[in-house]
Image (cartoon, rainbow, N blue to C red):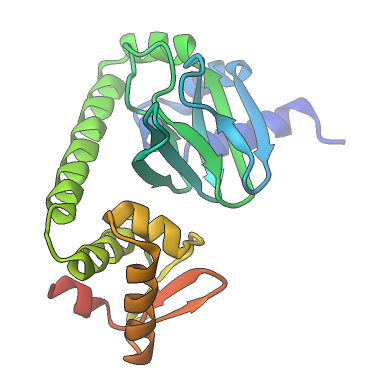
Length: 232
């Protein structure tokens, strides 16, 4: 049985991995530990639904979470992925009363959460943390502007290639001269991100595999020639 001081040190160490807390001393962060709660979610389990009260902010320790947003007619409007050591959701902070997206565990995940109102009070009293949030929101806005520009390209195959490039840059992990996207991705995921059909994605993926530009194992894409996508 671990004693309480060891458990607190583990939580503290976990939370110090998140950039949003980098400007806090260990002593200061430790005072907030009672307000953090640990949770595990299984693959395909829902963390929250679009329209649910926005009462929690999450800190992902491992695994991947997917955002989905749909219209009232059931059409997919938005899709995105969250990787480990990221806080989410950033959008709507200090403003939204409900979640704008549905969050689903793509893999088994472990995370902490804190009540939204408490985190917002912490941020209000720490200008450096608040500035970090502003910079992060600017980064997210810039990233989505780039995504929109790529999706507006008329050629469907080019949109798929740009989507793989985006996933490589956002989720990819270097492995020697290659890059691996550890997040399990299906043709449907890529088709929704690129605004194309699953058939178009499958055809292009198979072509890239034949040309040995990529390989796919257990839905994880290994990019053997990253420069191919950078030259698009």
